[in-house]
Image (cartoon, rainbow, N blue to C red; front, side):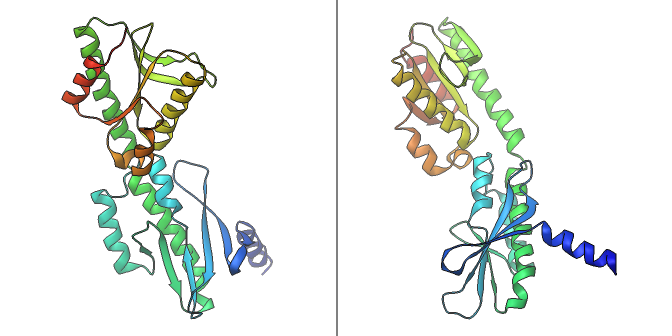
Length: 253
């Protein structure tokens, strides 16, 4: 009996519950997104009709998956979503939230677990091939850049720490006096680094052309990709032939 009581207290202590505005209860669970230390947070709020409780993770599973180079529109995620709809009270909505409806207070606690479980699964499945795909993508970029550099006899360096604050690196640099600085954006975070590099170069009035290349919009996020065109000299989606021609036609000295 003593062990049971201690175990109950130990389990309960793993969860942090916070009261937010409008009756929302924010539950920080002990579960984490795979490969990170980010804990899964589930929110419980009274439904608009007052007939129960809406439970969701605020779209964070999809957000973190995209941030880590995952693809929430992959075939594997679509199959998982189909299985989820038939075997779980949790659904994946059009606005990329995992949500469940509890008609009674008794269902709230188990549904919190189900939403957290689904969040962990979505992130894991969406990012399961991200590392390999990122490696393949970067290798293809490298092959094109090296081939063009040799063809036009341009000074070329890879994995270059740039002369700006923060120690950020370029994947490739061609030229010296006005270098072409190429960032292979394997994730939204890496694309953001390209924007930081661009702004640092402009603030310091350093010569350089910042070119960000992503494998697809889905790997970096559509909004992030669209924004990057304003905060880099150019942001493009990778295509072997077109990317090679772009590098060759870009004026670098």
